[in-house]
Length: 308
Image 1 (cartoon, rainbow, N blue to C red):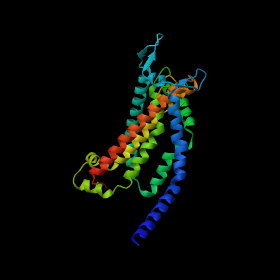
Image 2 (cartoon, rainbow, N blue to C red):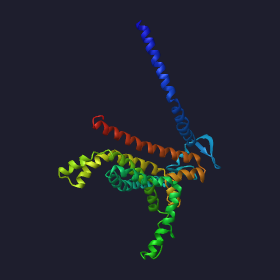
Image 3 (cartoon, rainbow, N blue to C red):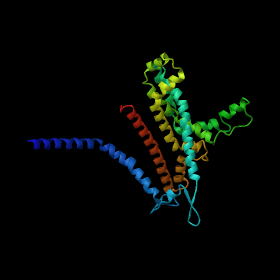
Image 4 (cartoon, rainbow, N blue to C red):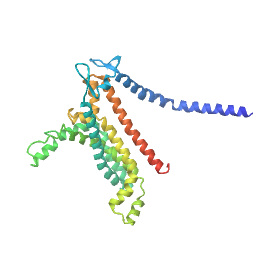
C-alpha cells in the first residue's frame, strides 16, 4: 500500500513537471531561436577567415581576435597596435561621462517629480516620455540642424553679437556627448522616480524635526532610498552608450569613432565580418561584466539588509 502511494505521488510529480515544462517551452524555444542561435553564429563567424568580398571563408582562424590588439606586419610578424584600444577607451570615457551627466541632471528632476502632488505626476511623466514618440534618427538629425555652422545656435549667437564667426560645435566629442545625454536622460529619471515615488514623506518631516538641513536630509534620507534607482539608471545609460552608433556617426561625423559604429563599419565598409563579430563579442562580454557587477552588488545589499 505504501509503495502504491509512492508510485502515485511520483507519477503526479512527473505529470506536474511535464506540464510545467510544456508551459515554458514556447519561451525556451524563442530564447533559443532568437538569442542563443544568433550568438552561436556570431561566435562561429569570429573564428573564421574574412572573405575579401564580404562574408567568411569556412576556415578556422583566430586572426579576428589577434587583430584587436595586434597588427600583422609584411613579414607576417605581429606588432602591438593601440588604435582599437583607443576607440574602446574613448567609448568607455564617453559612456561614463554620459552616465555622470545624466545622473546629475536626472536625479534633481526625479526628486522634484516625486515631491509633486499625485494628480500632477502623471502629466509630468507623460511629458518626459514625449521624445520617445519620435524616431531616434530624426531626433539626432534635429541636433545637426541646431549645432551646424549655419544652425540655430550659431545664428543666434551671431545675431546677438556674442561671436564673430560660427563655432565648431558639430562633429566633435562634445556633440556626441550632448546627443547621448539627450537620448538617455529619461532612462535615468524614470528608475529614480519609481523608487522615490514610494518614499514616506514623514521621513523628511522627521529629519526636519531633528534639525537636519536640506543637504543633510538629501544625503541621509533621500539618497539611500534612491540608491537602487540610481544604480539601475546608471546601468541603463552606461551599457547602451558603449554600443551607441547613431550619435557618433551623425554628430561625430564618423571621425569620432566608438565601438558601435566601428562594428557597423566592419560589416558594411570593411567587409571584415570575423573582426566585426569578434568586436561584438568583446562588447557583449564587457556588458555582461557590468551587469554581473550590478547583480552581485544588489545581492550584497539585499543580504546586508537581512535578506529582505
